[in-house]
Length: 244
Ligand code: APR
Image (cartoon, rainbow, N blue to C red; front, side, top):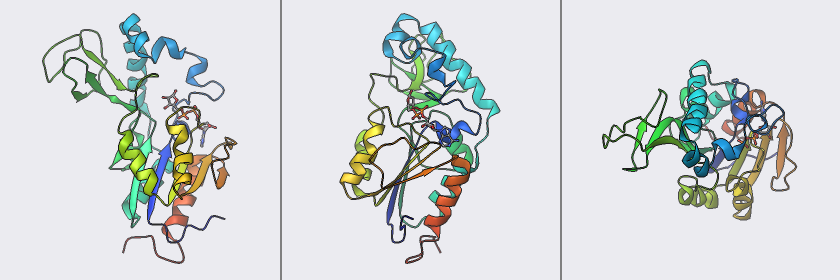
């Protein structure tokens, strides 16, 4: 068992697996999204240039689907950890859904963007967006139509706030990867980076990814393993983690 006592700073990375038990499809599991749709058709800047209406339709359907889903016990446990942990805490997610926020997490770093936001490529400003987007959508900031895209990071684009993430990885004492296959960089390199800088690295996943980057792997569903892990952190025996 990992000794979590005395841990002053934590970085958590989440992926599609944490939302799976809320009914959101993962990407690379059997029946995952990428077994049904080709990345090259919907998740690259080239796809959007070639077929903006088709790409909008793909993300509109996913955005509409968000209305029917609720955060699960794993999202809730991480919100509790952010609230009660007496140290530096950063939650980085690759997910573009809003389930961490819906569970009560306040400072979520969405490195791959957010489905409920739109980005205007004409004025480079973001807007909250819950309706469908189209090639005719008008930017609320510059009042111009034709430049709106989902505020999601596509393959070939740079994820958001990387400098900040690497600074926190270099400083953290504990890095935890939850529900991600660890196949997409740069997120797939975070465990290596954190471990190299001295952090304890833990993986929580339905099935171990087999990566040698982790000091410890816990295999099972996020809804049971994450709450238990958070309990362990907050009840660290040598030093209280829980805020008074
Ligand atoms: N609990 C824990 N882990 C789970 C669960 C569960 N209930 N269900 C599935 N998993 C695990 C799977 O075993 C798999 O290892 O979650 C992982 C999901 O992996 P991917 O589908 O590859 O998703 P992710 O790692 O988030 O993908 C990264 O790829 O396509 C891009 O931009 C997309 O952000 C995404 C990125």
